[in-house]
Image (cartoon, rainbow, N blue to C red):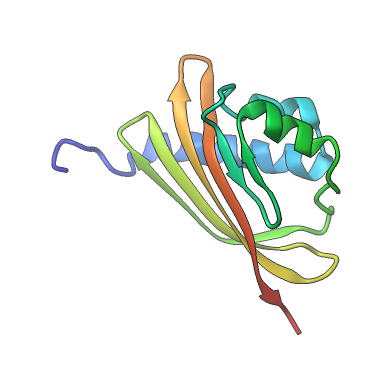
Length: 130
């Protein structure tokens, strides 16, 4: 582990910037932009609240038939962790703004020649807030 640079400030800032842009596209339901943030591979995985999606095509198809994220979604407790300049995880919690569900989301990002891409994602609901 000594040869791995963890959380270089410039890399953390870049991943945070990309994650923020992803979140903005999610709130706008900008499907083409969202598709572009996922690695175009059969090995890309997204586990959602009620779905297990394998491959970028399945993820894109799901986005086109699922209910979009509501505009009241609020993030908190976001943690970006980077390893060297090409690998990162982003973990966050959210409230959806409509049902007041509390959820959590984790993404694994890899720096490819054409930019940072999500290679694995997991979204789950913890409980309903009172």
